[in-house]
Length: 316
Image 1 (cartoon, rainbow, N blue to C red):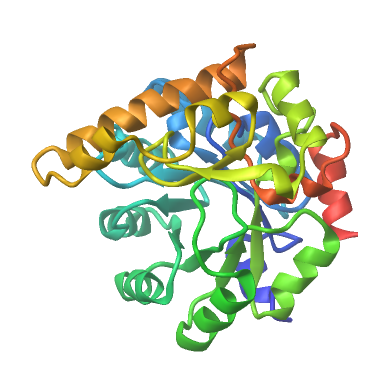
Image 2: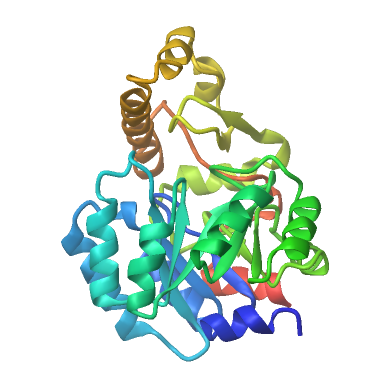
């Protein structure tokens, strides 16, 4: 009964969102997710042009089935120079939902709701959860300290229970789910659904290198580290020899420049662009500069499987 709000909100069979993953998520994965009875989400930044984003929306709309839904993730801060144009394309051509990250969702909520598109917002604490609820968000993505990529600092149980107590919209837990038992644990804390990403990296449908997928199989939770050297925001990656070589902390000059109010925005933008390029190269071709983003839930990844089989393992 607890999961009925989310399932009704998205018209899905199971209370799961396949989380948006930079460079990993694609239409083939989301179509398989929808056919499995869950929702799927793709970062808008996975598309270099607005025409490519439009084509993806058209493909997903034509493939949509009863019991599944699709959406897009928008980075809504100044580092994403394409944000407003991406939002306009999504609103024009349609989607079931948008997930906002790393900034204020106010404009996204305003524009999306005009088109009857739901908006879910990434938050890492109660303060921001209450703020996005006041702005009109339809649900909250509670990003905990077990999440992959840009994670939070609070444990799943503490964060979920706190948000459930003080917020009235659905709470969707993000992070730390790679098995049925872990999914059930999040629901027992009060979450109405879960957002799951890392277990889908090693899927048949993911368009990343076999080396990236194999790294998710060969490594576990103990091999995940937090780095400040990728996007300018702390991010979890697999602890490869290259990551060990470059270190996980900002250099003294990066730290110094980030404290300069006039330069901070531009330094962060440059770091975001450089880091994005490194992650792109590692995910799409063989390179010694292996920067593979993943979360501790790869602990349960033992082989490359179709999306539908991964979903089946999570719900059965």
